[in-house]
Length: 593
Image 1 (tube, one colour):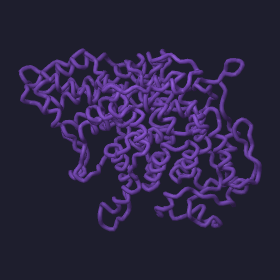
Image 2 (spheres, rainbow, N blue to C red; image 1 turned 135 degrees about the vertical axis):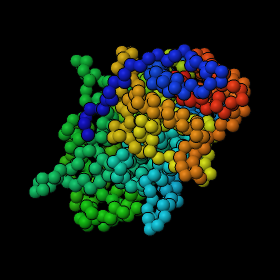
Image 3 (cartoon, rainbow, N blue to C red; image 1 turned 135 degrees about the horizontal axis):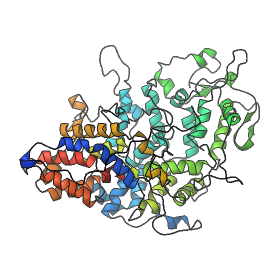
Image 4 (tube, helix red, strand yellow; image 1 turned 90 degrees about the horizontal axis):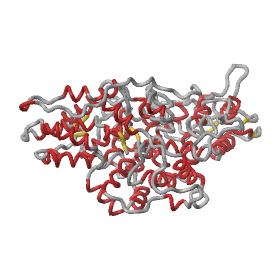
């Protein structure tokens, strides 16, 4: 892996979104051509209009203010509740859900979510064994993707599901090759779910020893240096756990800004000798449950044994590098400690590094609330990571709570730049949840959505590399870069993906669902909207609630009314389908504020 974070090509400049879509004359056919032609322009306008969230909002507070003064405690309005659900879940499903949150309050809702049971991905995929019949008793890899969508759409733990999605984009594994076994992927998802509200150090340890990560980043079967064979410990996991999973490339202040030296220059967090030191500390680990005295079991176990992909890796003393290891900031591990002690000491060194709190917390904020949190927002959350108020470092419950309840996230009127682009998967899940998605079988067949041409350009467990779908530091050339803002999700947004996703959503609404065969098809229910469609204003009001968090702009409202009124009142279902297609490309929806 390169030390440099990938950067996507600059997205081309596209025209301005038209003020309104013209209505068809005399009940003519739907203006699909106009809808499709506007897709790219709408996406670009959305991103340029509100990507990120720089300045401080809400009540001013200095760095010495008590943490309790930085958290919103008032009861939410319906608009507040809808905004919160867009940040803390995969989208609100109804006005009733928002009203329940209003009555319950943020704190009580979060506390309930912390206790909510989660759906085991492993349990699901085991029900799919041999589903294609014949002598094939294997679990298909597609079952792992279905398990993700089952949790997102129908789980009782929407907050956990949203945090797990954020964690999967931080501690990345991917089956893009494809060569990761279903039990490896799904047990890894269960690991993230189990630790989403636990301690970050425990999470780091379990991620490190999970065979899916060991296989993906080559720590599995990494052995000590062998001069006779000319082999060396694999450095892949050592490099990425530092660069991507914990501390980043540059030393940071507690607020996430670069820590400069006396000459005003940035300072690297580590160099190649440190990578080698961690790589040596991570040697000697292979599949769990085997004979740790057997060279054959270290190198050549039966990888078709599903149990191997579900157990933590274990160490083979004979393959661990026994010498001294250089870690961060000049610390050294003494020779002869053994594999388990070396690994735990190395992970402790990472966990206690001052960069971890701002580096991780900034990215969690980006995944949940806003692309460009102010330094004071980052610091408030990072301070909670360092100390949850009871002397505990790395308490993820406290960190998630701090991200969602910070005054910058909960301000009644978000700052002018506050917000983030809804990545394609969040848009899809939002539509499915708000439109009451169900299937006859109670499961789904949502698999490969990673093509930008005819799908979404993004699919869970199919990131293009360990660098995720996009970099948290990505700056598209133009106004955003000039303003010093980042727009991570813009890295997978292009003319091709904008047109492809519009076609995808058009087909979703036109066909009434997604997937096949019929018993597993995820069907959306347009009837409640159809019942409102005779009165365009009522339909638009409901769309505002379900998809815009009651933040629809006057211009978007006028576009929708113009479009809906272009069809006779007798064509209520057509009105709904065309309106939803326009919603999918509207800047007010594409941007989560």
